[in-house]
Amino acid sequence: MVIEPGNSGIGKGMAASGTSGPKARQTSADGQSSANPSSDKAIGDSVSLSAEARSLEKLEDSLRTTPEVDSDKVASIKQAIDNGTYTINPEIIAENLLQQDELF
Image 1 (cartoon, one colour):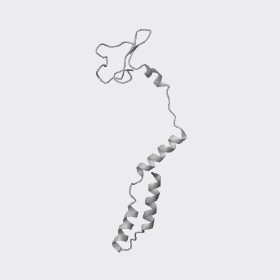
Image 2 (image 1 turned 90 degrees about the vertical axis):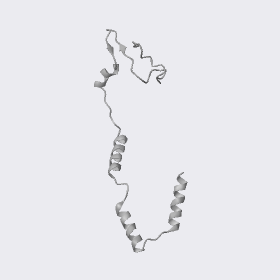
Image 3 (image 1 turned 90 degrees about the horizontal axis):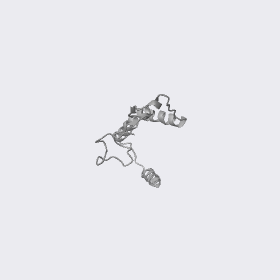
């Protein structure tokens, strides 16, 4: 490995292991240097996702396209409030609050 002058990383927040910051050049046996020795391996590398990962990806896509607000439900509640027919059931509200409290 060749360490270039002025590139010690001391005082620049570089970790002692040298894993962060500028990459050191490596010199091969034939004298040629390479800034990224793993680039030769990248040609044949491949990645495959598990069935679970593909399923999660589909779920994420469907969540991105689903609106955050149910506009039809909001409109029906607004109409019920305007008509004076919207009723509040305190027992259901209390039950839902208790169920949420049990989650934490």
